[in-house]
Each structure stands twice: as C-alpha cells, then as structure tokens.
Length: 460
Image (tube, rainbow, N blue to C red):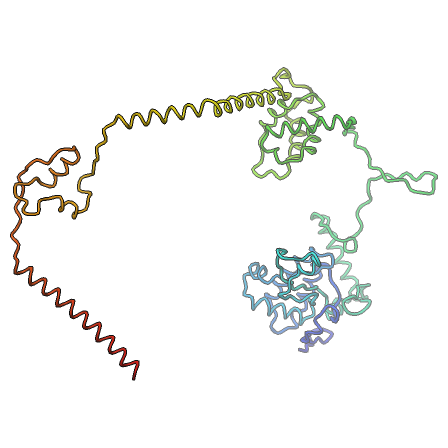
C-alpha cells in the first residue's frame, strides 16, 4: 500500500523475509511509550488496522519491561483471555503490526521442545515439555522517525537515535520536560541506565586526602542507631539452640530458619530471656493468615512493641518459672523404658499362662452346656419340610407351626387339628404327563430336522 498523507510515502511490508529482526528496516525500541506513540501514528497507513491493533500494541508495551532488550513473548492464549478477542483476530492484528514495521520476529513459535535445548545433555525422560514461544521485538519504522524529525545513525535494527532536526527540536524538548514532570510526580520505576537519567547525588562521603587512590565510600552513620555488641561463636550457638526450643513451642516458627530467628530475637536473648519466656511472649502475638517470612515479622513486631507497647529489653519478672533444661525429657525417656521393660516381662512370663487358663475354662464351659439345635421359623427348604410329613394324608397331624415349635424345643410334635388334602385327579395327572411327553418328542424331532437341513445346505 502507498499513502501520501505524510511527507514520505510508505509501503506495507508484506514480505515475511523483511519482517525478521535481521532484515527489518526499523530500529530497536526499549521504551513502551515510544512504541505506543509509533503505533498510534503508523496505524493510519494500514486499511484494516484500527482500535483493536492499538489494544494489541498496548498489550505488547505492557510486557516490554520484562526484557532488557524490550522483547515480548506472544502468548496467544493469554492475550486472547486478556483482550477478550478470538485467536484469528489476534493473529490478524499481529500481522498488521508486522506489515507496518512496528514489530519484528526474534523467534518463531513451534512445537519444538525448548527444554531440550536448555538442558542439553542433561535432558532425559521426565524433563517435561515446553513449546517454543513466538518472540517479537518492538521497533520504530523509518516513516515514523522521519515524521517526528529524528536523526538516526545506522540502518536496520541496530540503528540508534542520535538527535533531532531543527524543526522537531522544540517539540522534543517539550516532550522531555513533560516526562520529567511526570517522573517527579509519580514513583520512579526501575529502568536500565541507558533509558533514564542518572540518579541524584549520593549522600556517601568520599575522603580522598593526599593519596593517589580513592578510599572506599562510607555511609553516614545514623546517630539514632546503636552499634550492636559483638557476639562470640559460642554465644551464637547457644542462641540458635535456644531458638530451636522456642520453635518447638510456637507453631508459626516451626518451618523458619533458626539462625535468622535467633538474630531477630538477639535483643531479648541478650537480656536473659529463657525459652519458656520467649515462647510465652510470642504466643500472645497475632500472626497474619499467610505469613511468608517469620524472621522479618519477628524483627518488625519486636521493634514495634519496643517503641509503642513498651516491651522491656531486660530480664522479665517471671525468671523463677520452671525451665526445662532437658531433665524432664530424660525423665520421660526413663519412665518409658521402665514401662517397656514391664510390658516385655508380662509378654514373656504372664501372658502365655493367662491364655492357657482362659482356653481351659472355655472348653470346660462348652462341655457343661447342653446344646440345642435351633432353626429359625420357616427357614428350611420346602422339600425337606414335606419329606418330614406323613405321605398319606395330613389329617390329624400337627400344623407346620407346631412342628417347628417342637423342633426348637427339642420335643416330639403333638397331634394338632390338622387339615385335609384335596383328592388327586388321576385322569388329569395322566393327561399332563402325556402332554409333557408329546412336547418332548416334538422338540427332539425339530432339533433333528434342523441338523438335517444344515447338512443339506453344506452339501449343496
């Protein structure tokens, strides 16, 4: 595309080979505001670019501070979630930025495992997989530099801004003053020394004297800070041991570094506080829900309580509290060993005799007892129950309930009221028998006919 809106004609960069970092005609950018200014100016030269292109450029500018070269990783899924657009829309507008000369390829994304290259010979099973990401370099096209009146030294990606033309110098000075005012009113962010101005003069005092070398810079000592008394290695070892006892009593100190906690509690330890007194004091402190650094919290809270709550740095009044110097633990071990010996003696001498006596008494009790076989009511099969009854008739015989009651009590069944049995129709029974026999013969003939039919089919 060719445009005549500006003082210089611009053609879209449609060749993919000209969109690489080695072949691009645009120069490198490290500042996010410069990249956004170039994007807002160059978007007019593309017929399909618009506000969505500016939104994507803003997302790229927000990631430029993560790299010292200003490179940004194009995470397509994260960008889609951030801007709320489709994947195809993101890919199209990234292509618009490349055609405008605002971004250049540093590395093409692929399915290749980047961990294989990173680990080298140490790569093996279990190292994981991470695909190669697409990395872009924000750049400034020559058309934007010409429109802004920039004087550029060099060509391509390695070109640098070396000055301004006479027409754009006043505008550059006004922009620099505006950035300076914003920098004074807003907190300063970390940038590389090549981007921001030098810092304010340091309060360090340098004493050169008459010698030919400069002495090491020394910080001005704060008169409010008191020099700590030196501590010997033995005292440090005792403080760490005391801190470990405190950590066993205070739950939120259990996973912290004992050396750092000992350093934070050094004022109280030097004042003569014992482990019990320190644990009792720390147990009254309110701990945040998610405590990341226990040592820093102890140091901050101790300083705050000394200034506001009046926490004394002297030995507390409850010095006469019982302190466990290890004797209670040793007594517990001795008691456990004594109980263990008694249990071993019981297991070896007393327990076998007790088990034998218990088994003898159980056998004696089983021999003295009269065993009765009890069967629950109406739980045996119907065939067994009918076989136990007289075959001729049920007249003048006990009912099933009477028979089961007699069996449960171990007695003979008594004669009950009984019930009569209907007379058997011999003619009907013979008819049923003949019908069953005819059905069996028909099934046999049907099976034989099917076999003969299969044989005939196989032969034909």
